[in-house]
Length: 183
Image (tube, rainbow, N blue to C red; front, side, top):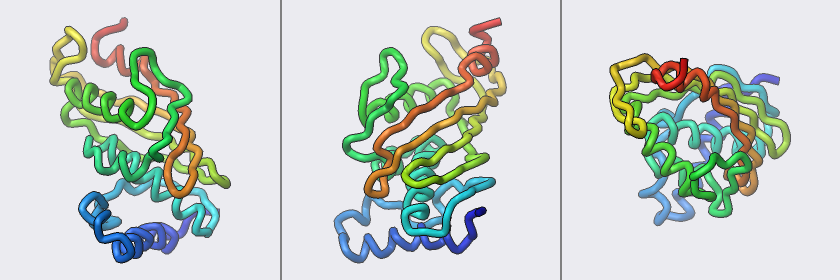
């Protein structure tokens, strides 16, 4: 079934409840559901487990959209494992933090959208779209304001309301072509 707005709201309500229980966590938490990326399309059961999975996936997408490490910290388990770790990337939560910083150096105006999200049990599949302009630096290449528009697909395993594992595929060929690094 398609997720109802009430389920998204329920996922957002878990945050204020957690803040009431643990005031020390308040400084690191998003202040409202409005801060998070909203998926264009979601298919999920109307359960607390699905709501927690949707919330974790939205937080992680918001991290990629904003570059704000607070969202990655909230989305990723302390024991996070990247199952498709690119060469040179550090395993664990530091890997995405470094990757986001490097990518934002190349595409400072990067925007991310969740086009599709499907939740089944402890798995979430997400189709993301990345857009922006290559105005910064990527390695030794300086951008010339080239438009960037590529897709990625992620599969998450959720444990205790956080992303514990991630398998991902990015359309790097399109990205490198748009950056002028491949024909």
